Image (cartoon, rainbow, N blue to C red; front, side, top):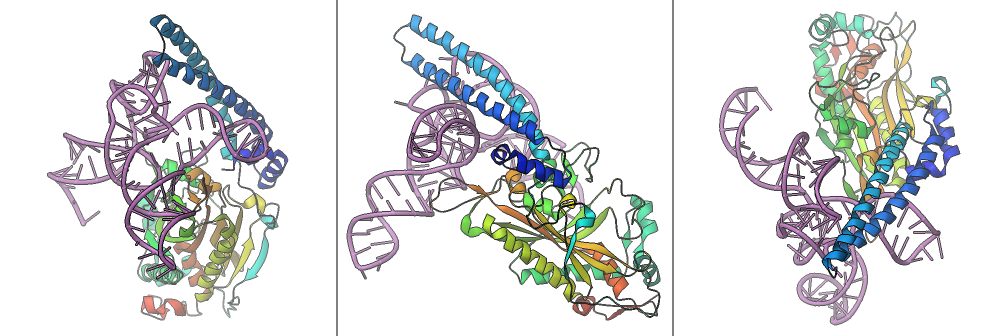
Length: 426
RNA sequence: GGAUGGGUGGCAGAGCGGUUGAAUGCACCGGUCUUGAAAACCGGCAGUCGCGAAAGCGGCUCGUGGGUUCAAAUCCCACCCCAUCCGCCA
């Protein structure tokens, strides 16, 4: 959520931003409502003040007659207040609705436009693989190696669910250990998080449960939903928290399952593990002072790069264009790994993404900080980044490390956790 | 699932219809004292909204929403959350 004051004072800027973001939020209408809101607020305050004075004077009234007159005054004033408050609530509700639908501001360097406008800003250290054979995709490789059971997944839970088997299980555990170890070395606090969260927490993080277009699974008869990412729980963990400035930045890393309905995504890249309803993810999350967030964003990106360079997977980094940013993001970098088995001759596929949400989530979640000796509070900045999303990482590993005989080499960095160098066909 | 207790400022914890936005303690900030520190003492210290260039002024907020009243942290209703014990269970 943006600062209402800022929006009211910068209608043109915000309108323009909304246009770049593909949001149809009616900024002008908001500004008009907010003007009205302030005026009614001022009127209400004045009446309340009068009513309060009347109340106090009753306790010290000279006689009964005066007391009764005063009571009548008080009654009348309170009625007026209550009428104004009704209008105020109505106006606030409408303007809040518009405000909440507005996306965050956009980093000045982020490219403007749709998906195609994204800019490649970096490449990983690993070159694209050159195969002397036609590379398979992860589904075929998995079949040879006995790694997945999609049929059983579909039978048990429907299309988009799967069982990992044998070495795939070890691979997933190895990836988690690899990621967590690296982050522990970078002073992250590691957590496993709830896989469910209250709807209020989802909303605070910028996710919309229970709408017609929701990507969120909800639990009927409760206010709980399955989380789409640990970003929700890690951010939610600090709901209404007021930090001391010297506690920041705070870096968390959370392991959770992630559940996504992927509504409307059928038919497009749905083969295998690429787009699934459930996967496991190690997520990074940071709370920072405003002036620290850009550097932290770089740091999170750097860690993502280090993780995938360390795995020996080729990738490129994308500076996501304005129209493709989620609502809360001020700027977003995606890591796209090379997936040789995708499409006709290999394609880039998103494996991680890191966003600087500035104060957008913090405002809704009421996560603030105070500086010693200073009155008042300020909103922290929040950032998130994927360390490793298991399903996508497994695709990238299998497809890049495959060999002519159908076996798959284990990335050097994972050998200690896997206890083997190669996955061999069964 | 059952029973009980409870939700008040950064924390702990009083208050249970009328100068209480809230005692007290801790923490924190400033000062006195001290070579320095500690202790002691003095002073300050909630958030938020509105008006204002600022100083400041005013409103609202004691889990949430409603009700009673001139007046509610205090009374009534509903809901939410938390803790403990019992049951079940990995």
